[in-house]
Length: 432
Length: 177
Image (tube, rainbow over all chains, first blue to last red; front, top):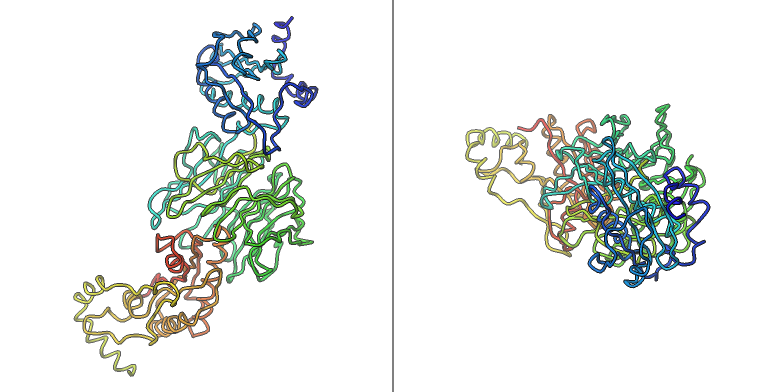
């Protein structure tokens, strides 16, 4: 009976099963990503059987552990060995080491394709929570591991995962007076880093399109700045065009059809939006103050931006047509780099106060401000696609910038799994 | 000193050119003072070139005798009292050597976020540009760019270092002797 259930569980059923059985329906185990005081859930992830099986389990373990919501159990403690996806695990063996969840799987290679079957078990209720199968080319085994991580995370937290994603960022090297800045991309767990520019000029503020295959970024040379669109699949690069003065701070609209950015003319920066189809640009702000760092709301109807029109840098929200500007930040300090969450419930920002920098979040109306981090220099927050984790860059005095992550409660703060120096991270949407 | 006297001096100095280049290279660049007192700069438009001074109208002449950077207060872009004489001297020098073209680079310290600092650097570059234009330098000879906080000249993390990194840098891009 159990076996039959397992055999029927295929990828196509995944969405349906999720809809029918949200995590809250299972009283035994669930993880609340929005509470600041949860204990990480003990989870056992033995090496999968077959080719790459141990590595796949390691990637899943790393992902879930870094989320701060799971506590993978040391495999040396495991009693039952050699699990079979077609057979129910010996639950007492897993209960006795206090594993609340168990992930096991099997890798098979058929006709040059890698097939990974996996199961997620609720150990104490002895129930199967997921039974899925992913296939891919053998060299894509890490992505399969990320998709399994996302499925487990979603099943146990009720929130979308964020592991099958990439980060585009600025890799930095060299001393403070001759820093080289190179556009780079990597998987969210730091694997597969590669460079997209040659480091001969400054690059800044890369951002992903919601389509995830296109980025926009800015180049800065002595003769001026430019904004580019870069297709990651075709490597095609194009400028968004010539403007008087500097152009900087580009961001895609959620539908990918527009880019908002700043244009500087005679020292004054205003926000423009360019329709990528018609190539018509529209000026959205006309104020002698600095107006920059625009970020669209997920529905594309509003833009949060940074302006010092009130005397110091603060956050403002306006319609996507520039109408109805309203200030939303009122605390002490200087607010910059607003980023609207992909889920719409928060705006993340950098706040400078009392000689320190913080990454913080507030509601889109400015209420419920919370500071998540404090350091000599934190900046450039970017949201994971599930809107529950932020990546940002942190500098110690005199040191190079490093990438860090923090969850929306501020409880789970840690260096990102990238050993090098990096700044200006931008998180991709979930890959297809 | 009259214009003709300077001209004569400059002609006389052409012969000493090779010597002067070596001498200039080892001459320290004026740096701003420590913390509270603003950076000190020669209040006079230009030192008369000494026997071993740089070739008048050269990049070195501009950098050493006039000063190529002016400094700003935190998050400010107005020309400070100590910067005005330097920019006045820059303007006079540029009027004297009309073939010279310049780029003004605006810079910010690291105590701000990247994009805001780009905007702030652009304001500073524009303040310098407007000063020079109002003192007779043709706008067509001037371009501007902001490097934000990307091009510090002092790697330190003291207020003194931040102060040096908040500057407008006048760079000669062509037409100098």
